[in-house]
Image (cartoon, rainbow, N blue to C red):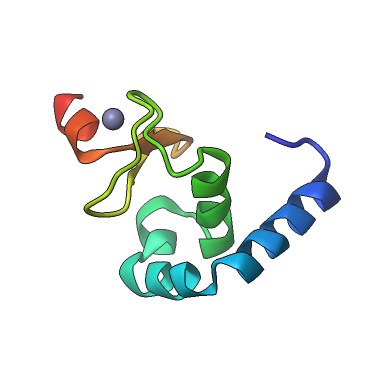
Length: 89
Ligand SMILES: [Zn+2]
């Protein structure tokens, strides 16, 4: 992950410009704030830094969005999971 905040912001803005349709879709499908305490922006960045791939098997999820894996106690996000790995945990 990039440490510089401005760099991160620019990255995210560029990314959004290139994928406007995905953003719309995600906004509809994911009620992230209530579930994970994440804003859409933060969630997008999460998918972005993980290249839309599962943290465990490194495979992209094709049928649906990757699940956000988070620590239930601390609410800290650990990574993204495909349905297969998610079920295996
Ligand atoms: Zn996986």
